[in-house]
Image (cartoon, rainbow, N blue to C red):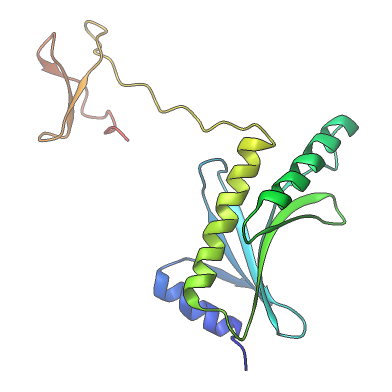
Length: 176
């Protein structure tokens, strides 16, 4: 007897991973370096022998033919170079990535690694094929009086201007 979705729910609970159940699937939502929201779905195959985790994250449906071709070549290249994931195109021309494990031998660690591998693959596709760059870090705050960069003083959890010898507004967020 293989694992069930109840077993997977237990693993997710043990790892503190938030999820919800949608019909016969488990849904987890992540923020990655390249995407504000990536929804992963997890379900068992119809025969119960395979645990499949997947996401669809881009579409070529409305792209110009040249862009469709570029993305398809990227998808094929990523499929060739991927480790443990499969890139795919569905009937709606959505690009997805998935992992599949047999339900008899999969462990919790393998499943969690599979989730992370999918998220890394989605980001890698964005960087290498979609040419999406990670957003730049926010600029360091500057002094309202002299315009010089402020220095973060961790002891006081405040920004400080060394030139003016005064603190910046308390509402400035800490550095990342």
